[in-house]
Image 1 (tube, one colour):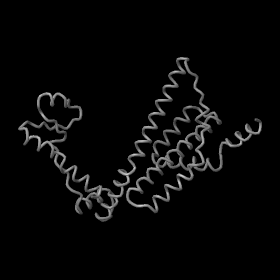
Image 2 (tube, helix red, strand yellow):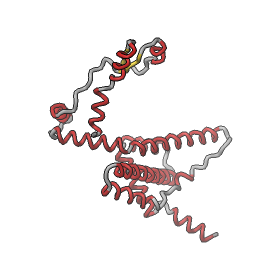
Image 3 (cartoon, rainbow, N blue to C red):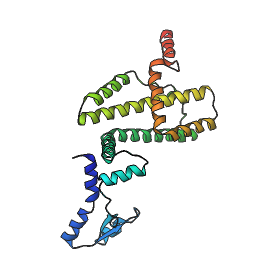
Image 4 (cartoon, helix red, strand yellow):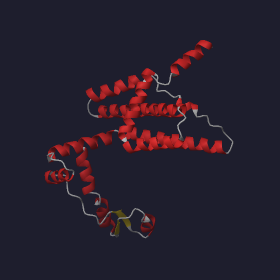
Length: 241
């Protein structure tokens, strides 16, 4: 079954359990819209909480609905093509959910780590050294992982394509971190004011996905051309030792 059809079935039958429960138990079902409704109080009273109970079921994505959607978006694309586009988008999003979970978990763990180190530094318990992040460089083996992900996306089928997309997303995320470390390195080297740095990061956030891929490209090129000269420093230390 196609992903789009699965979403349509879930939406159309989202109250089936409530109907079956009411027929089986003879109890009452309480429908509500607000997510802050205390469900535990309803359950304690012997009622079944069913969110969005009074909302109508949206129409299926048929040709007429898709044509109206395309017209609303200012597009003259036929409904069939629009449905294929929506289908492809949903399949991609569902397929890369594991990588999205990994990236979001990594981001929040890193943010919590930095906040904890900052708090310990303010208390005088731990002194944070900022040089580690600005000198981080993506390892060379990521190039092979990137090539494997691209090859899998182009030549594999079915579930293997989703695995390749997850691998690509994680690798691109790692290169984006490397690109951010390059950016922070040159900010520190130029002694840029924190206001300038903040405005630049806000500008990057406004561009969203484009900024993510730009940082990834910078990180990828840095692993090849070594913009910060980190490899020379490592070689100099090894020769001195």
